Length: 66
Image (cartoon, rainbow, N blue to C red):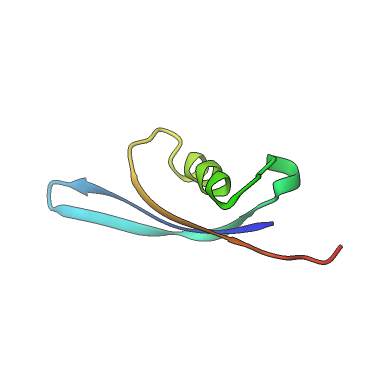
């Protein structure tokens, strides 16, 4: 399981505006995540599907007990 922390933003006429995205989780068993970089890549597609935002994304591995 990966906890995803993200801030997205973009430039507008009056400057740069950003917003924090609520923390969400990605399950490596569902999304097939193989690394931290892969989790960030998938999270980027989730929060920025059209590629028009600047993204700062952190993925933290969460260890769960089954």
